Image (cartoon, rainbow, N blue to C red; front, side, top):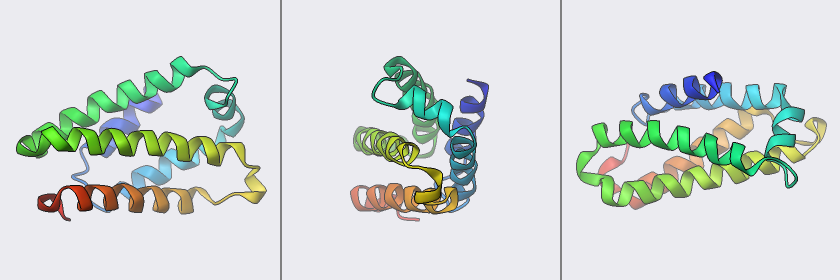
Length: 130
């Protein structure tokens, strides 16, 4: 849980910049290094409450950061954020199910995740284009 807390505080204070890719690489490297554990916890026979706890923790921290940065955009931004969070969890689940030899690298996954998140944010919130 401490590791997840560190991740969420780093990404949410990063001002939606490309420096967030560094954070995402750290996340995917950690996931990849502990693939069996995370695969078990997040798989179809895993612990649904674990995934919910992670989403709640990250959601609470990130939404607080977004409220500070974009107080006038929160009505719609909270939905875009939730959409991105759910998509990232699905992306992580799919990636963890693959054998490491047959899957994308942590760098590729971090880059893909960042690009997908930023495309949603930019498309749905024109005043937040960065």
